[in-house]
Image (cartoon, rainbow, N blue to C red; front, side, top):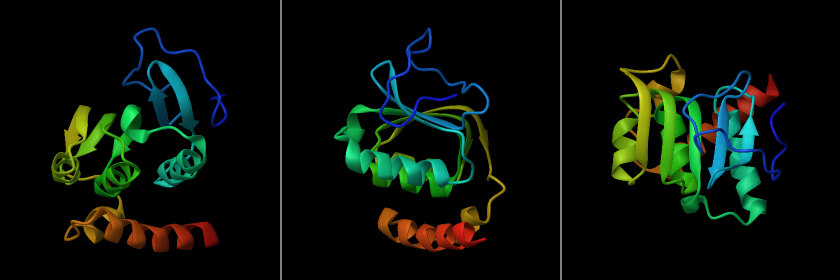
Length: 146
């Protein structure tokens, strides 16, 4: 079971790792310590991380994020959160320009043209993280209402 938000888990052997043990989908590191982890899917881990960071006192610029799949929507959320370092198993090529433009350092296990998510197409013409966040909030509200 992942640590609860705010608890520190022992670091992986190499400090921070590209692999996420099942069923984890996302981890946030401060140094070698895991500060946040999630087993949720879609963009929910990043929205949960946003709430965690708002009350944690952590400086997101001093953290590193490990994610399973990073599409364009996730890239906008990472930028909006102020995270500067990202490792991801799968990176959408549609996410790359967002991360590059906002100075996020990225390591990816694999790159794909796009991830199979409707938000890839919906955000194709959007360049502003705040505009993307507003659109994603509407989608999230719909998803949670189901």
